[in-house]
Length: 106
Image 1 (cartoon, rainbow, N blue to C red):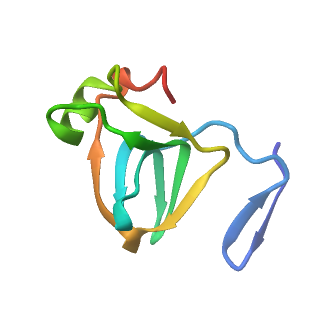
Image 2: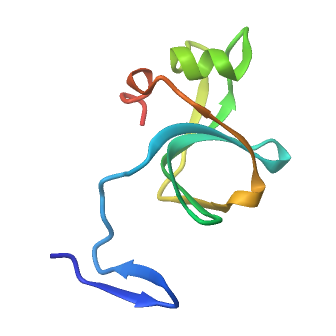
Image 3: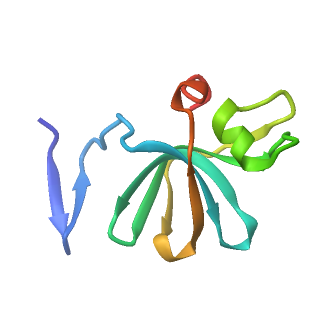
């Protein structure tokens, strides 16, 4: 059993869960930041597990092509160490992806 403590309604674990939860999403945030990972949302608090910044899409048909086909030859991903957290108000939009095309990258 994993020990935890709750402070002000937020749960903290002695050994944080390693299994990433949530669907894989491309998240476009304010100021042009584009990330991909497993999105977990609790109210306005968002966590992106196994996240990468999509520095270069490498597509000819935009983010939709990337969501559908997975990373392409010219796609540049910058892996983030740890967890990316942000407020939902910073989200411009999210894209659902063809998860089977992204599993080997995340």
